[in-house]
Length: 238
Image 1 (cartoon, one colour):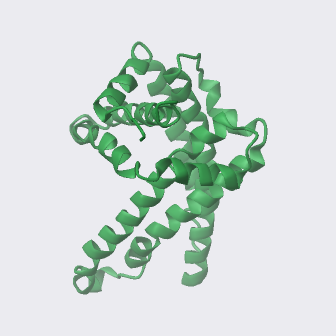
Image 2 (cartoon, one colour):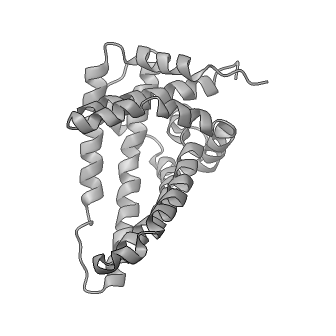
Image 3 (cartoon, rainbow, N blue to C red):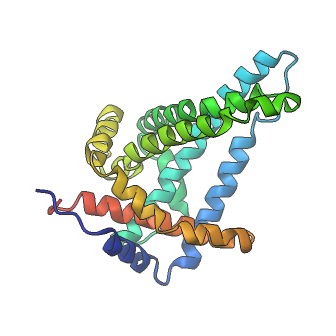
């Protein structure tokens, strides 16, 4: 029988890993966000003459730029994973995905990003095809579509939440094995990870009143929680 640590202990582990390193990880996260926002904006403002071409181009550009930006997420994960194991970490770790076998990382992130986009596509299409003058007709559809798409997105992201760490820990495994390993690890553990993230909800809400500053700290804690969760899943007891 698997013996996992409680979420309370994992949350304490995450905070312990950040002790005395909060300034460093916060700046690393801010740099990651700046890079991600800049990359995701590339091609977003392109307006073609045909609405269908504009939609298709926007989706394709979003897919490519999101995948590229997610490569820096692997580097950010390496920072928090190193801290969880008491190993040195530096800002240059953000670029770790571009060293070694980058093709493997790209294939994994392409697959995960494609699934994320498919899950959120109904919301995007509803907003795109709902002109404001006819908005009242679409109001009943909005919560239904949002709930279904969000549930699918949450399930997908929880299923492949460990891919970045597996890429870092098992450089000799191909993309298919990494994806399969994440599915195996998260089978029966998706809800546990979701509940662990919920512990940070009050801090995320506090970000509304702190101009987003609290969100930076909450996001850093969330990455630290993910690293602690992965460490627990890979422990001999589990």
